[in-house]
Length: 154
Image (cartoon, rainbow, N blue to C red; front, side, top):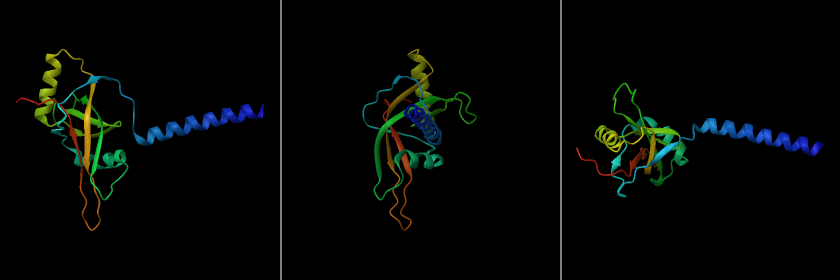
């Protein structure tokens, strides 16, 4: 009977720890409608990432002497209620906001979704996080994010 109690307690501690760690990391599971496939050029630079350097540092595991070059997935989320831009498309990595699509990309992305009768859900695309070095002596670079999205015609 003592062994059963120990197992039950261990499972309880594990579940509680998992919940706390998940809450601290800010990550959540988001259902996506699919992938937006790009040409592999990572030509779309995310804007506003200067406000989310702490999130990018958390995602990458911190700054190092070398510039980051981390391939990952980004979630594109429509923000219809954004007070600054009704066409805003938020970019999230590991559940954390890291910036936005540039206005021209956001407008085109929304138009392509509407044209394809695509659901207004979340889609993912390939991304790369770059920069974020700290070599000391004031030599410190910001993190940036580039997305692999199709070419956008204005």
